[in-house]
Image 1 (cartoon, helix red, strand yellow):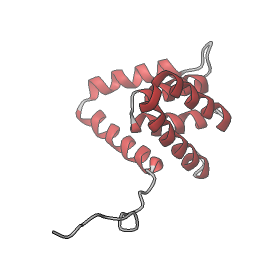
Image 2 (cartoon, rainbow, N blue to C red; image 1 turned 30 degrees about the vertical axis):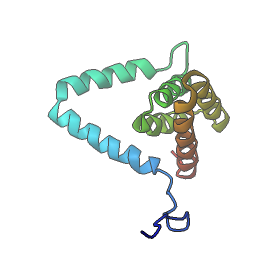
Image 3 (cartoon, rainbow, N blue to C red; image 1 turned 90 degrees about the horizontal axis):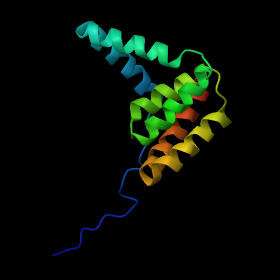
Image 4 (cartoon, rainbow, N blue to C red; image 1 turned 120 degrees about the horizontal axis):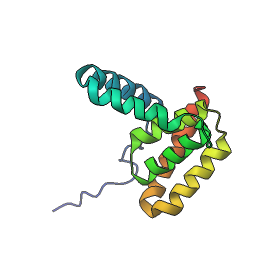
Length: 130
């Protein structure tokens, strides 16, 4: 029986996830959810608005916290939304990177995988000007 081992040259190079497209896709999905489930989504939207509004902590800080939790929760959609929203709220690249570092501390190896994705998202959203 001949050997059929594949070489790395035969495997396609993985492409980075497109977090800008994921953000757009999720916004459309949320519009559909709001249309089909207006009660729960209105409640969620109110909760979201209240939770991230400026208070003792700034909106940017709250988005960084949400990003770190999203990384620890292994949530691509959370990464897309909260990197986007943190930058939009005025967080700097360095602040996003530090939040990613805290997520690695708190979430370990699994979070490190998603932290890598968060860095990809950061690069993508910076180049598309949130």
